[in-house]
Length: 486
Ligand code: BES
Ligand code: MN
Ligand code: ZN
Image (cartoon, rainbow, N blue to C red; front, side):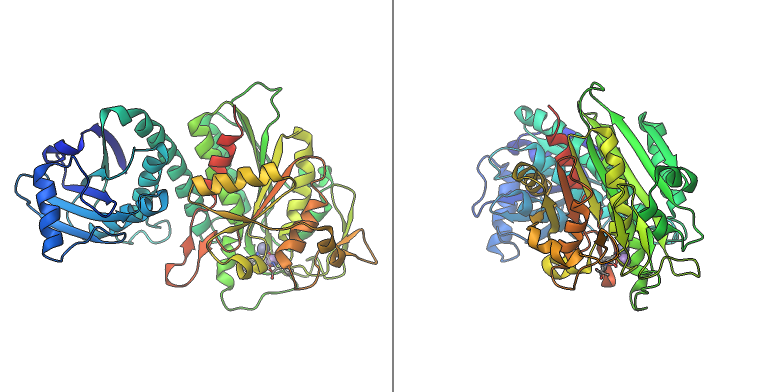
C-alpha cells in the first residue's frame, strides 16, 4: 500500500483527485467549513434517510455534482476518539471492498485537530483492510483493489501527518511481519526460519544478530530450555538482535519472546481438537520480530535488545517427562510436573540470559496460559509489572496504540502452589489463577532488573472463521519502546 499526503482544507475537498474521496464525519452535526458540494450531498443523504451522522454508518455515493472524485464515501464517526476514528476508517474501507477504486483520499471533518495518533491509526486500519495471507495459498483473492491512500490535511497539520505516517507505516510493517510469521504453518515457521527472519532484518536494518544453536545453548547452561526442545527433531534456536540508537553506556530495553513454533503439549499431550492453533504459540516471538523491525525503522535514540527463544514442544521417546527435574541457567532446579507448561521453561532461561545486558527494563511476551484467555478474553492482554511506573507505561502504550492490556496481580501468596519437594520450584501450580501463577514462576528469574510480562494467549490470534494472527502486541510494544527513549 502506497501512502501519500496532500494539503487540502475542508472547503477544497471537492477538487481532490482520487478514485474515491472518503469523508470521515465526526460529531452529530454537519462540520463547519465543509465544501458546499459535499455539505449538500451529506445533507441530502440524511434527508433521504440513507445516512446518519453516527458511528458505524457509511454510504457510498457516485458522481456527486461538483465533486471531482467519482466516488464519495461518507463515514460517521460519532464522538471523535482514536477508537471511533479507527472503526470509521475500517468501515469506510470495507464499503469500498468489491469496488473498482484503487486510490482513495481520506479527509477528517469535525475533529478538533489532526493528531499523529489519528494518522497512525488510519494507516494501520488501511494496512489491515488489505492484508491477505498468501504464502501457502497463492490463489487467495485480494481483499480490495485499494493500493494507494492519500491523507488529506490542512497545511498546519503537516507535522502531525508526517509523524503519524512514519509511525503508522513502521508499526504497520511490523504488524504485517508478525502476522505473516505467525500465520505460516509450523512446518515452515520453524525455529530455524525465525532465526533467518531476524538475520534478514539485521541485514536490511543494520542490526547485530546472533543465532545460537543447541551446542551454544548447552554451553550457557540453559537446562530448562533444552528440556523442552529435546523431544523434537527440529533444532532449537536462541536468537539475539541488537538495535543501537544511543551510546553503548545507555542501558537497553530488552524484549523476550516465547517462540514455541508448535506446542503439542509434549508428553502431557493436548487434546486433538484445535491443536493446529498451537502453531500460533510463537506469537510472542513474532511480536518481538515485528517490534524490532518497527523500532529499527523509526530509529529512536535508545538501545533495544530483542531475544527469542524458539523450539518445538513435542512428545517423543527422549522427550522431557512429568517428574523430571532440570537445572535452569539461573541455577534454580525445576520439577517439571506438566510438560505443557513449556513456555515458562524456555522463558526462564532467556530471562536469566537477559541479565548480561544490564537492562533498564525487560519485558517478556508470551502466549503463556489458557487461563489468561478465560480471564481477559481477546480484548486486553494480561500485563504484569514489578513496579507501578512500568505498569503505567505499558498501560499507556497499549491505550495509545489501541492495543490495550490490563494489569494483573503478583501477590506473594500466588507463589504458594509452585512449591516442590524435589526441586527449588515446580513448573505448575493448581488450575486457579493460572495466568498469575505462571507469571509468579517467571518472576523468580527476573529479580535482577525491572520486569514486565505480557500474557498474550487471548490477543495474539483469532480462532474460528477469522482464524489468523492479529499481530498484537506490536503496537503496544513499539509505543512502549519509544516511550523509553529520551
Ligand atoms: N501455549 C499454551 C497456552 C495457551 C493455551 C494459549 C490455549 C492459548 C490457548 C501453554 O503452553 C500451555 O499449554 N499452558 C497450559 C499451562 C498449564 C499446563 C498449567 C494451559 O494454559 O493449559
Ligand atoms: Mn503448552
Ligand atoms: Zn505453549
